[in-house]
Length: 187
Image (cartoon, rainbow, N blue to C red; front, side, top):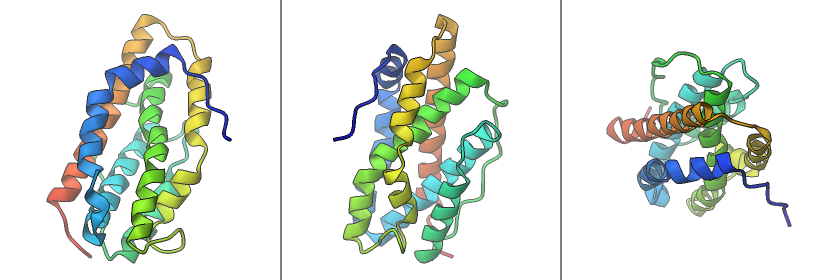
């Protein structure tokens, strides 16, 4: 049995204050993997979100290049083209803001376990079409992130920054999935 990471007050704050934004993203993704077409749209949206996150977290020890590469392999397997990357609109985040973004990016690995089962029901696997989900679902990034988050001490202003950055990341994810639905095109 996997040991659960400690629950910190920062984690509680993030879970409570981002639940509505998280639900909006889940609503865009949920049920979308009922067909190969829907799965391709999911992959396009996640690829866009990872690109935006990679730009926001670049140079700070958050390695998203492998996730992006796996998404591109999966998109090619389904004959979908990636969405063009969005230009970063915010200044480079500070340490606390990066943690807010990491909360969303790392937390996606939890949902990846569920989505991987759906992709497998469509006939995709870690070797073909579901490389990203298999890698993300098997990555211990979420429990490691929670341990890091619990070890931090935040001022009230930093907690606001943490929350705002997580909300910004959820907004970027929501935008990426909406764009993927609107620009539903094959290669």
